[in-house]
Amino acid sequence: MEKSFITAGFGGQGVMVMGQLLSYTACETTDKYVTYFPSYGAEMRGGTANCYVVISDDPVGAPKVNQADYVVCLNDPSMAKFKDAVIENGTIFVNSSVVTIEPERPDVHLVKVDAGSIAIELGSPKCLNLVMTGAIIGYTEVLPAENVLQTAFKKLGAKRPELNPINEAAFRRGWEIGRAAREERA
Amino acid sequence: MAEKIFMKGCEAVAETAVRAGCRFFAGYPITPQNDVPEYFARRMPQVNGVFIQGESEVASANMAYGAAAAGVRSMTSSSSCGISLKSEAISWMAGANLPVVIANFQRGGPGIGTIQPAQQDYNQATKASGNGGFRMLVLSPSTLQEAVDMTWRAFELADKYSKPVMLLMDGFTGTMMEPVVLPEPLGEEQVAAIRASKTWAARGRHGGPQHKVMCGPGLDTRISQAQMNERDAELYESWKQTEVEYEEYMTEDAEIVVTAYGITGRIAKSAVGMLRAEGVKAGLIRPLKVYPFPEQAFEKLDFARLRGIVCAEMSIPAQYAEDVRNVVRGRTGIVTALSSGGEVLDRAQILEAARSLMK
Image (cartoon, rainbow over all chains, first blue to last red; front, side, top):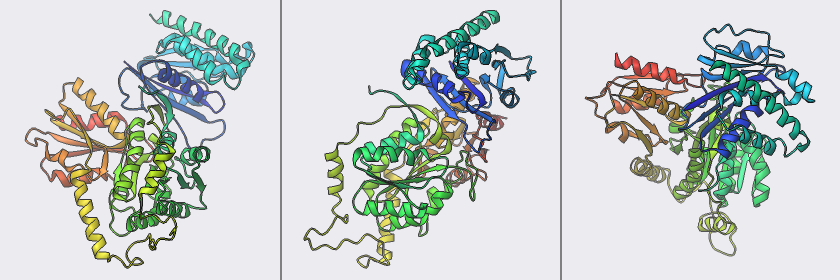
């Protein structure tokens, strides 16, 4: 089983960290193969930042795919750019707090996560990416949730241990939303 | 088994170099390989090595020349147009028989090119990385584990032949992250022993009679240009037997062969798997070294059974495909799947090219 992700947003939303949390968890806590490829370039401030993650039971062929199983859009420019980069019957995760563009893709599933508002409610807008990560895991079950959380503690908590409780709360809130969407789909 | 570490390509190469006993790195910043000098800047002081950010590519490549002349395992890296600037020094390394590892994290070209990944430097790497008609062993990894293994090998090969060796990466393998298992580092005694074994190196006369000269014919009068070039020609010829390295995958009964190197090699391999699932008898030839070119792999093919060969590379115009064409000599059809300008080759392009041969 191979699952590909594109996560996209603007610089500062934690797009790369989201990709890395999934990747580090896959590498350090499972036997899965994983690749992570960040976009780089002369990016404009406020423009899109994105990364590609592939998690697989077999060696990964293409670390960058034009059509991913899952696309995560944290802002409108990302939705505009990547709404067509998801496979038929794939899923788009949307940060519905700020994204206003509809994907107009009747052939894909949409998981709306009010991540920005939840993060503010929890006390730190910075944990938006943890809400989204939780939703991704709750919905896809691509990795064990507790492992992802442990990775977050290890990687993010090393410098800012005081943020661990907020990050955990954010992750669990997201996970619930993802889980509910999964059940609704089934 | 040793621990898997999730690393970025540039950093995995730099860390492996340090573990392989590299104690001198000079470079100059250029995207997409800035993580290489950045990593060395942090790491070299920990092993009493030297990191220098030169004032230019030209200067840093010549510094690597100097360190190699002193017997130190030495490295420089750059990207495409930066490698062009280093090419004078690389030619001099070949002329002076100096073991230096050079990494090229290819970006767009010609000229300054886009900063995104590309494989536009195939001809430069395999045929003319400078004046004088010299050749280098050119290793090109598809995965970061291969990048680690090949970095280690590159230092061994450079010392074995006392010649510059190139690690042909690209912006993709440089910036992506993947789990790797790193080799055990050489101990300081081993590093010192390797240096001491280079009796030709300029390490001071220490009362001895020898005056060490580290340059090629033209300045060094002990050997004529013709003598040296004939000797090197024999060496390059011998590599065609001893240094060819490639992966074959499902070629035994293949009707379609997909061939690609570097990052495109792994994409091609997964395309072969998908074609097989469709019932297409596809196989893969993936050079691990692009110089010497793996002629043997193609000579072994059953051309009567083949419907054709798909050459995939991130270069327009095609470069690798020309070498394939020269070996195949019209015995089967060749189609290409190409990308350029920073677009990583999509697997769908390879599949489409392969299917076109099945019609």
